[in-house]
Image (tube, rainbow, N blue to C red):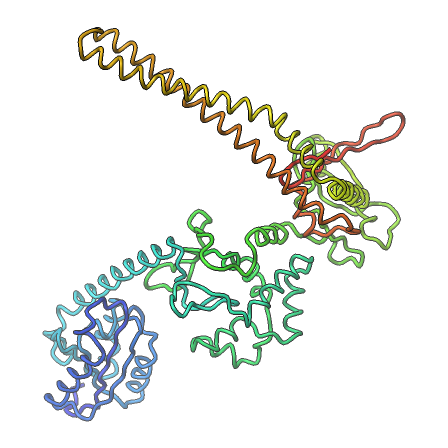
Amino acid sequence: MGQPTTYNTALYLRLSRDDGTDCESSSIQTQKEMLTRYARDNGFVPYQIYCDDGWSGTNSNRPDFQRMLSDIENGKINCVITKDLSRLGRNYLETGSFTEIYFPEHNCRYIAVTDGVDTSKGSTMDITPFKNLLNDMYAQDISKKIKSSVLTRQKQGKFTGGKAPYGYQKDPTDKSHLVIDEHYAPTVRRIYDMAENGFGIEQIAKRLSAEKILRPGAVAAETHANFEKYANDGKEFEWSTAMVRNILRNATYKGAVVGQKKPTISLKCKKRKGVATAETFIVEGMHEPIIAPERWELIQRMITSRKKCDKGDNLKYDNIFSGLVKCADCGYALIPYRSGRTQKSDARENYDYYCRIHREDAKNCSKHRIAAIDLYNAVLADIRRLAEQAVKNDEKMISSIAARLGKAEKDNVRQAEREIKKARKRLAELDEMFVKTYEEHTKGEISDRNYNTLVAAYEKEQSALETAVGEYETTISANRENSENAVNFVELIKRYADIDELTQALLNTLIERIEVHEPEEIDGEYVQKLDVYYKFVGIVD
């Protein structure tokens, strides 16, 4: 079919960051002036202008480009003119498909002015595939540079996301820094409060939905046009478990910046892939936290370990000890199982803990069975005991714990300080001996053989002394740390003098682990030992 002589022409303009830094020659205004002049000078009148400003050429999913294709298919346009082939697109497969298949099939002429391409002149199309390939390679090179720049900024602790996370907003004076948005931050704090108090993720989502609290997408729609659909879909108050989980797992809320989380698969495939933990990195302390870092870490442990037993049971047991209770012999976790006793209204009386390895194969370990109610009561009593001691005489308790941790802390420190003083004095003497020996050698008073022997001996002694000084300094530092740990523990345990029940948050705050021993028969009675390892100090007798 021959080409028509009258054209309804589209002047297509496009520009984005993948077009490099040559903004002056490729700007939308420059393209518009060039193409309108070309259209007038060459008789392509009337014409319509289609413009995608800020849209990448690596795929064809651009608003005005799609509108132009629709007009072509509806017979409104039969000629398309661009400044060059890269304005049409930078994906050589897609662009080649348009120039070689789509436009000819729709009887549409295509002209790339500066590249000299005109589909009505077959001779100009010979080199077109190579130019498309070069444009594609250029886009890939720019993409790599942009990704490298973003990665560098992330490693510097700069925020590079398109929108701030829920509860934050971008600093008006520095877009790579986050500041707390006090309008929505209280919801974030409440989500963490509920998680710490034992609410499951699904329960939290239902509570927020019932209270008509705007979900993150609807909040983002207030400032980002791309999220408008989430504000007008009639579900702006419907929180999903994924939304709650993302907030609870996001390290941004402890003041950190997370980098390289889910990179795109490639330039042409915008789907994001999960990456191994080793490929992600976190830069701490980059903005004000909504949740204190130590509390954020605590809640992560709680979320990871939290587990309900027998979900279909009305008397389901809330395993607040999850992740804390270990077998004293094999080191594996103790798991709660329903007991064979008559069922009571208190679910804690219906479960026993057993060594997981024993349950899998009885030959590998013994039961280490302990009733859940006994475990609960024993730990509660121990915490109360220590809290009462701390309240009555915290100084005595601190000294006792520090002495146990340091094993005669004061004597260790004094001895280490004496040894360091002696070692440094001897090092100063060795320095003088080095100088004296060197001077005697240069004067010929000491032979080369004797000089080398003396220097080797001095260096050997010097190295040994420097190692010893480092070890003594470590001893002093460790003992001072023991004192600090004792103080921290006593201050912490004092808060729980009046507790009457245990919670998962309390246990994870106070306790590192609980080791359960196999029961022993002593004087006709079975006695079971529990070792409670507290934060900072371990076992406290």
